[in-house]
Length: 129
Image (cartoon, rainbow, N blue to C red; front, side, top):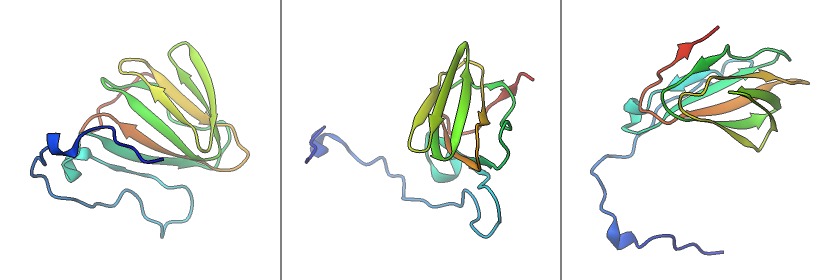
């Protein structure tokens, strides 16, 4: 299905060039890990790659002053977002709203791999645990 959500004649390029940077190395064995500040690309979002091979493991409880979108690339995870518990698997995405503490764990079996989109040109976080 063809899309026509806006008239391209109503948008002017802002002068930023296309850009490229490395988020993680494919030469490293194991889960992808890395972060790419949006500032490096001239982008309003920061991108993180997170992975682990151990069920029950995951980032500690933390909070950001902006939204975070998690894209599950492989495996299954249990997200704790405020008072909500959300289970998600490869192909799904989860939103952590600004100011709401959150964390997640690998449900296994096997690797959990996510791409985490921080809706900010730089990564800003306060750990709560």
